[in-house]
Length: 452
Image (cartoon, rainbow, N blue to C red; front, side, top):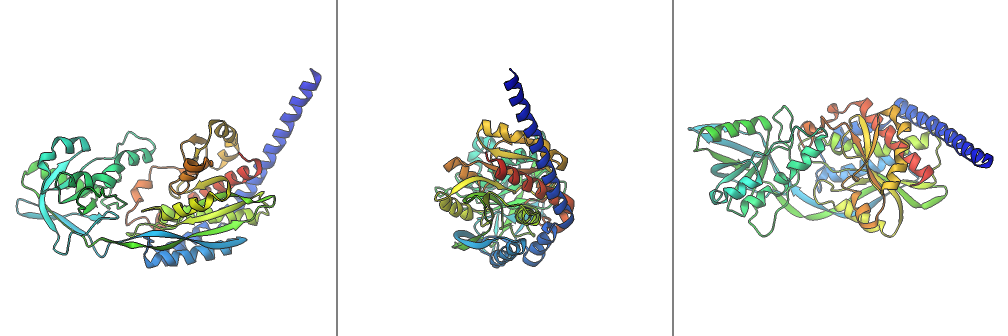
């Protein structure tokens, strides 16, 4: 009995001592980032000297050089480029649309969706057909031929975590064109993936079904979407004009930009931290995903600055082509099967105040990690939930069972900026950005120290 009591007390004592050591170290990390962080200045350089970084554009390669230099400046022991195939879709000028009702023309703020085909230089004019859901499309399929289908599927405001509303609505952007083309539509317009209170259209990738004709497709700003709804509901004879020169070029070569902080005990075992370097073209890609890139670089810089010596190699990856075909992720995962990976984390939900981490991990491991929450609570994180990692790392879990995760910041403002002309540096808060880097660095430290 006495021996059991002694053992229990000893375990409790060492647990408390270890927790205090971890708390002090994380405080040290936090102080380093809050006082000396390079994340905000790195983001300024990326957004203002490179700008939008759509895959295959000249900015793609300028961003790769920026990433190499930023990782070297952060103190990476090794920096290299990993070649991959990337998509190459081009917008080619200004996208246009308007609706014509009662002999009056009303312009619409639109952006062609990624991978859309061109309308041709003269554009397309056709009668409008308002469709509120795919169920309604099926019910009215005999009315679709020769029309421009306008999908008016709204974000569901009942979802508190706004990414769930995005997940609910995104199929209209991704698959809407081909579903309408199946019944003879000549083009589609989709209500932007947002519940914002402005009129900025939100672009993003769509996918064609090769069994049906490829028709042009655009997103429209929310104010103009509501105008279009009112016009169609008030007048049976509404025509829509759309014009875009968008088109797809052959896939080209791009690179994942990788920097490593070499492990002291297990240099051939990797903990990945990353964001994606590409963005859409209307703006600067500040939240999506410049923030994730500078978060990841800051993790390496801060751990180096406080004198930490990781057991495992911490690998920072700035992924290519996430927004379209995922060529960078595919290449990284292809190479990863030859290596030993411990954990992979992505930041791709913006530079907002951190709230938690989503983790693709076995239940018992998740419960272990949840015991670390008190160490992160002072810096804003209050939950670790099951789910998965970001788009670039999830396949590591799906294919190889490697634990993955993603930083979950507050989601309320993300889809105000997502894929729009206002995803710019000025809409990122320095303090919130730094808090994200603190929590990622703290979690990577704990995973490196204790394993999973």
